[in-house]
Length: 108
Image (cartoon, rainbow, N blue to C red; front, side, top):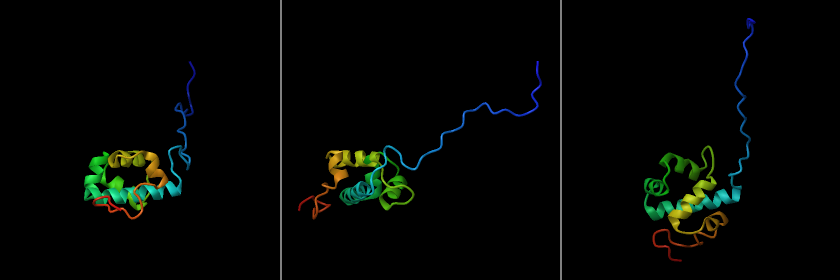
């Protein structure tokens, strides 16, 4: 039996995270999601009510909407679409909310 004199690492190296992830949105899509989040916040009354409706933490939602750390993700867009009862494509393209719509009642 041989005596080991040097330390040997037997763990696989962890993969490094790249800057672009498959679920990352373009800057235009992120701006559209931010405007939808701001519209929904006014419609529901507060960040807390919106976070509870979307099923996320308030701090996470605020950071995504205010562009601290990371911007909104595709998951935020999907959850916002469920709360707004529209398809996610409308939020990502910016066709919802319509320009000039009242966030309280939705009228033009």
